[in-house]
Length: 452
Image (cartoon, rainbow, N blue to C red):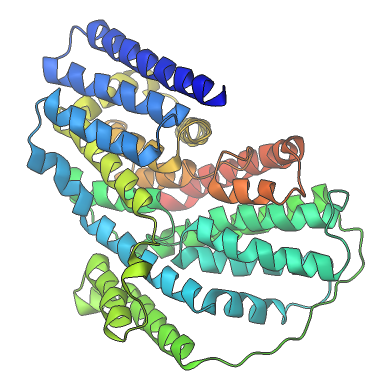
């Protein structure tokens, strides 16, 4: 019976996507034919991304297929983004994260750092967030949350407070989820929208703006620090710990030879990313180092390659293709001209606030990768038309579409926190509303006072 309902739901959404595509095509009669066809493909992709009746990465592949077969694009120009430099950058990051997980280096680093925090519950929550954010800088926020929440659960059980009635337990798992999302904003490899912004600035803007790995961090780390402190304060206020102190086990473990080698590869890779201006290498070229070294030393094998998130890379590639198609048929220019007419004379800060919360709203129903792939290429010409800083606008949108803390389905870290059974949906909404509003306003203020 459930299979029948699922199939009916799937068919229903496919029919709705088809109907919406026809409405979009016939409702945009003043545009050129290819522009109308691209918008129709976007309509199909958005419906399927929102409904998730098929995997997100399959929707990306479907949109690429439709762009070729229906909208008349060449296969080469549509498939090229699937091995774009930012895809290589993320592939290197995924391989490095896989090595850390395989040899338990991630857990070792996390537990070692947590043991040095102290016994104050408020400071422990802050420590959890800092460690999670640090891990999320170099691996996916999903992986960071998946590592830290089990460690958090162990500590809660050791202290006898791992229950749905414990405010401290709720605060801990929510803090980890939020920190995983925020920490990933710090680096280009931390979250797909970051790399999408970098890619479209370099490839699709007239100025060909290049943002280095260190340049991205210089712009975003201050926001991340302020956002983490705000979220920590809110989590502690909304989930006041009922314990005065916590105890942490003192299990000590030495580093194995393989863990030392992986730490060396990690250090070399990060150093390479931070010194691209000195070496002349791109971040994507540096990302090949961990792949070559880890496989060259025999630390990884074919089975490890199968365990990285290829679905994310396909989703990423399809999003880049769709965004590039919008740019090639100049939908971005049309949108820029239209929005510029309406927004001309509106105070800059109000424009920024509208864009930030529009991004947050969109990513509550569509994945942040898909949101960024559509919004970033569209907002770059809007920024130009309004005389705004293009680089800052791209970063603003990339970060804005990642700031959803309300629902379990909003981000994978939220889902992991909810899966512990320690927090209810209504509690996630209560906490998440303040996180969305607060981090959104911090981002708008950061843009207004420091990025322009």
